[in-house]
Length: 101
Length: 312
Image 1 (spheres, each protein chain N blue to C red):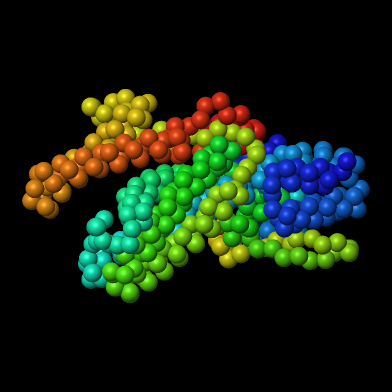
Image 2 (cartoon, chains in turn blue, green):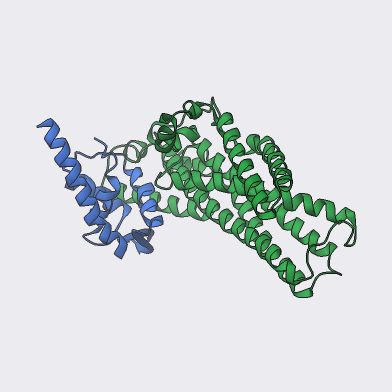
């Protein structure tokens, strides 16, 4: 299943727990959704870049196991926007629930 | 061929800047290495997705941001051009007053200067506003289709080009009357025109560099202004204008001509003067539409190749 339209909010929520690189974000997404969101992992990176351009994330290079990797973390603006993303999702989920249930 | 090699090829083909490309490739290489360390069994493409699609997503999003940034820069540079024009006009009375064709160094300088100062600002205004409106209406779109990005750049290019012609006209005017007008006015005009011209050249460079290759058509003006146009459409006698842009443009032109005629007649206390200026404005609008309609593509181009599914 692909999390249409909700990927950005979910990435922000995952990074709310602390800084992480792209691979860790992809794994956290898979684990937290219990494997339901098995989207192509490569789609994480365009989303991370987009969120950084929107100044919701910042990033810096780090070195791990002799490799360079980009580590992302929430900005103050990003932290604030998580609340908005949660609110939007609740409204959407409640509306779907009201129609389907 | 590995995933990163394919991705590099696709990013290069889509003209993603080298620094951004390097960063993207390093991130994917790290991801693949992490996967190998954890013993992932699937192929790289199965886990990460199609390299062409990944490159397309990056390219489309970067191009969309570039288009919006170029529009903002063009609009700022055109505002500086307008400021140069207005300040010059307002201050010229204190610098020696208007000069006619019988003054100045040469008619060869005066004629192109006057033509540039009369026509180019109108083209710049229309194109700049059209580009800014579209970019504004598309400000929340993550990745715009090819045709949309190209249209914004095209309008920016026409607007900035017309702005440059305006700046050139200002400089020609300064040179032509350099012996007759006050030095402070000449230097102020030259400096403002040069500053605006530099900004416009940078904006033009941005428009020429900004391209995207993911396909997709541009929305019609009607689809962009759907709400406003539907309301307009609903009110008699304007029904049908939504699907007929040229009568709509002619109507807007007629309103401008009538307003110009009435205001000028009132200000100059002369109906003849008002009719003259209104007629002149009508010629400028007709000429402007003829020149600009093809350049700025008032209607969406048909038959563009469709974009990928993720762009819809």
